[in-house]
Length: 200
Ligand SMILES: Cc1cn([C@H]2C[C@H](O)[C@@H](COP(=O)(O)OP(=O)(O)OP(=O)(O)O)O2)c(=O)[nH]c1=O
Image 1: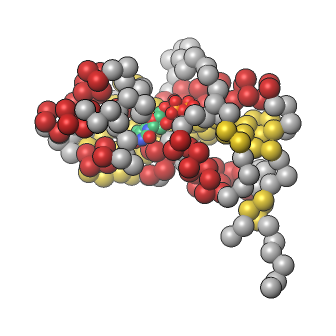
Image 2: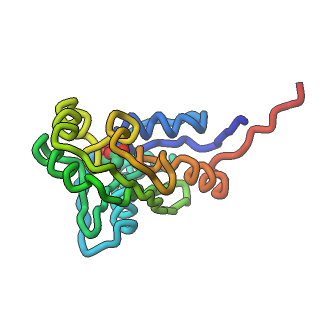
């Protein structure tokens, strides 16, 4: 299938995983990371929190590119009422993984699509259950350095995936972008469309 767009599209993210997932659409796009303060005020639900940060990421990019459609995303890990962001150091990474061991957590990615008269956001949730982890497993994984740029201190797409017993929901959402829901949303918004190929 071949998709097309009349818009210039900007992915407001420095995440290489988001860039790779967005590339599945095979349409031209640019990456412009937004450096923002990733905190949100008020007692928000996990979904509203992820949406509000995703939206915040689009704001400076929309301002600088008024003729583009800008897409921002934010992924957070929730264990009960506790929010586990990116660990600030290896000690915190170990602490997060100990908490996740043997339990089910919720990975929520907020996505915000802004610009050219479009303003829509959504959040997708995936439940992830970890095996019971030993200290040896946690120490060995954290020593790889993979934890530090990832919410919840693990990457399901890297060796962190070895800790996962099961997931309920969209795998790509855990990696950082629910690309299939985004694909359907962009089609509905007519931001993207199928390019009708002339019969050969
Ligand atoms: C749980 C989990 C998170 N992650 C990543 C996805 C996100 O990149 C990151 C969470 O941080 P985010 O703040 O969502 O994203 P980011 O800082 O990487 O990029 P940007 O703000 O510029 O868009 O954690 C994985 O790669 N694998 C996983 O299994």
